[in-house]
Image (cartoon, rainbow, N blue to C red):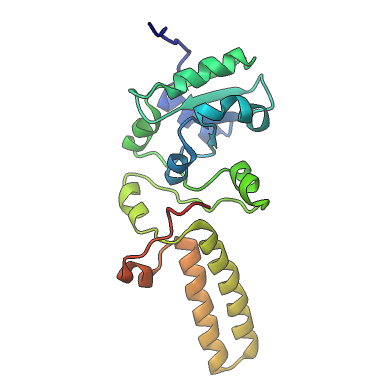
Length: 209
């Protein structure tokens, strides 16, 4: 028979207060990276349960840090197992947020999207910060409008900025047209929404980074 894992818990209200006060809290999501990228708590790190022993020393070097682990909801036991495994690895201040991501989003609290810096650099050797979308109660509706992938968004912002500056420097009607096109590319990258993609039913938002 599988043993029940008990761990100290922390409430949604306490987490929110600590984030708002800027306390040095390490928030850890224990779900797979594909799930993490869609929505996660503000400032959260991704530490999938099956890679905990490999990634914990890199993402959580301070074993005395205050750590909160969470997963999907109250029926998900990944966070409890992660808390147990972290304690066995020597981490001294680990608590579980039992309500998980569902409880956080149901309360209308903000979330972020995108990959962790470590995950991006591991795959690509790059160090671009993730583009994040803040969401509240309208998060599910707003996330549906994002149809442009993360690195495509970065390319749009960088390319659009370059084109806008070049167009303005020309000081002509043609230059203004180029600047306007650059501005639309910047908007595309910043919002993650492309009207042409929407019309054609295309989305690159869920493609691997």
